[in-house]
Image 1 (cartoon, rainbow, N blue to C red):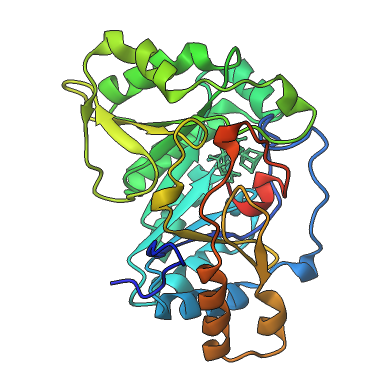
Image 2 (cartoon, helix red, strand yellow; image 1 turned 45 degrees about the vertical axis):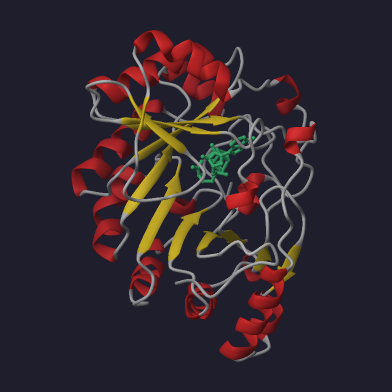
Length: 327
Ligand code: SAM
Ligand code: SF4
């Protein structure tokens, strides 16, 4: 039973850790073409520092950890961190969100280190479009990454597709068919508006609209996923081995059931993806604060977790780019 809760009595048991702000892609919905100004290496937490914070958080009831980025696999030695976290007895779920480009090379070692499952971001099945959306990536690399993750048993491999009007929404059916024919677990995510030039041209497709466009494939039956009780609502088409998930950060926000905290690569505890409130954990960590002191800071920060974000009222995310906060 989690001990950590915020002032709205939401139990908090999930920590998303951004291990780097670096990325090997420049997705149009996430980054400007020139990238973002990067943190200095000294500002980024070492693996030992991340481990100390996870241990403190675990003593408070955090039992699920997700590693994200930037692109987490561009940081050297990630399996070392996974091994350290896997050694904390009360952590019972360690997952990774990745663009999959480097996954084929690393899947076996990640699994051996203790990683349990992966979410792979993939917004198109068309090579040329993949290059346009990511501005530099090769579809083949991500597809090989997905195959490798399945092969070594990083299950369930979930595919995250950000659905954008006029960009990739014509592939909704192709992705849905992958759940029927190939057993994929696909999650359709509403695009979240962010500041920046490239994002001005991107429009949201609502989950309601997505569902209508998929209706002709059959009735979507609600489905309970074993692992990962996050914000997605899962369904299955008749006779499909795979599942379809929908994530509605904009049209039907799920803040009331938010169970998560985020740790940025530079050691800030972030209380909400879409709000700027952050608490510095790096400073106390580097001045030698005890685990008890760190726990006190986490408890106090968590109590101040905001009730929700404001995207549904037409707001735009203006704070740090998602690549610095982990998405
Ligand atoms: N690089 C890794 C990846 O792409 O999976 C991890 C970091 S990325 C910031 C985490 C997630 O945020 C990805 O699934 C990505 O699709 C999602 N994301 C980024 N910008 C978004 C936006 N504007 N709207 C919705 N999802 C977004
Ligand atoms: Fe990189 Fe992930 Fe952002 Fe794409 S979504 S630019 S892969 S951090």
